[in-house]
Image (cartoon, rainbow, N blue to C red; front, side, top):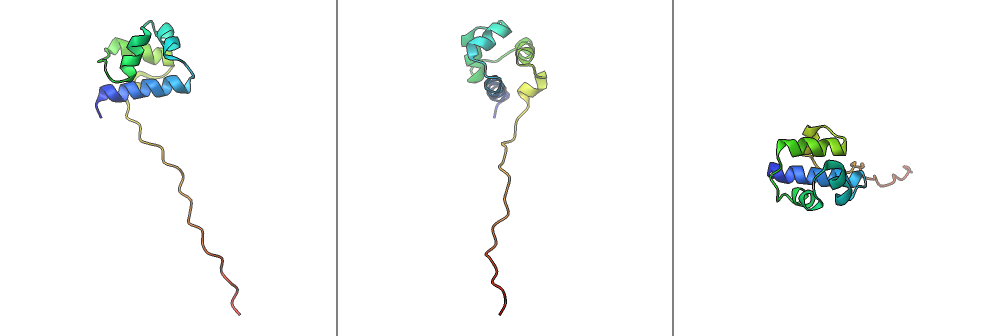
Length: 88
């Protein structure tokens, strides 16, 4: 996956975790809502300045926006064992 797509998905995930709309993030960051939408979709090649501004607006470190996340896996439960019958 291209870094631009990773960046966009991270911006979107963090924005949603903070329950912000694109419009609210655009207000805090000083970017337009259309620009935020394009970044999240991976259509914009954001500058380092934008990376810094969005990181500050989302209250994360800049590297958090460009780090690939590994999918979280659900905890694996041990398989149920059939009930053992008492020996006669």
